[in-house]
Image (cartoon, rainbow, N blue to C red; front, top):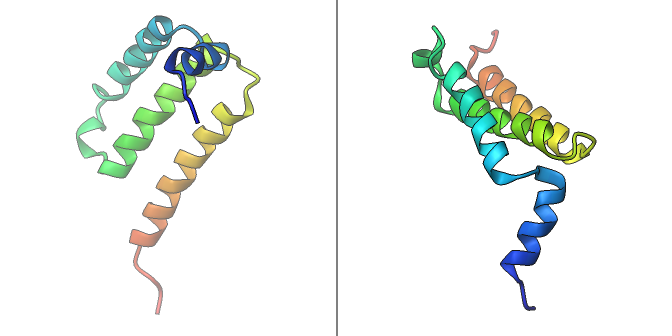
Length: 93
């Protein structure tokens, strides 16, 4: 199998948008999130999920906003955090 990185990047540009635009928006969103009053209290899973959700939002803003995978990814990261929070809660007797 011969994988050409330029072909892959060209395909991703259709769904993800221009990397420079995407990264600028993603970094702005993350700046807001990680300078918020609660930023120092996020657990690693919460911080990572917020980071990835910001990344996915930027892709929606810059790329194909009808790309279902972007929306599913946001839902997936949120679901993972919900599972971590739920598992950490004390179980009733």
